[in-house]
Image (tube, rainbow, N blue to C red; front, side, top):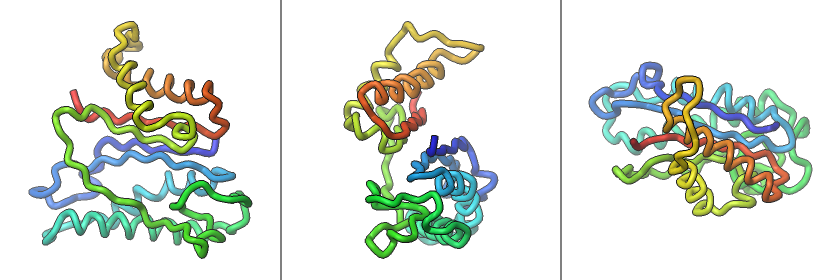
Length: 202
């Protein structure tokens, strides 16, 4: 398994954001390893630490612009740290990458691959129930719409019972992740499949 993931429900205290502007900071990430686990493991161990160190503190004129700059700097810094420590040939893809953004893969940076993330601000509504994070192993055999509908069907499956004292809703989210990953493998995905579903609604 070359993928890695991180779930940090609340890092507000560590980030110490301007309390009047940002009430909570959460961090969820899926890292897809390419030909080895070194970069995904490094990112899982270091990206959130760099984010915490760079997170804006004190008064800021524009929260959105400042946080975006923080994220850009965090990815760039993490990429530079990794490339200093790792040989570009050791454990890296020797063929053609299927991604346009990467931490590591130094030999491809001159070909257009970049560590700069695609950042979008989304306004959540009462109708939003979850955020799906997954590596390309899932999306090779599922469209985003298919994946969302699959998860919704699991969340509505009353046959899924709670276990070990977990609330039924938590059991259904966990089952949705496991079933979706398993279904991707059944559909023929030969890649690693990591699925994370973050509950944001009731």
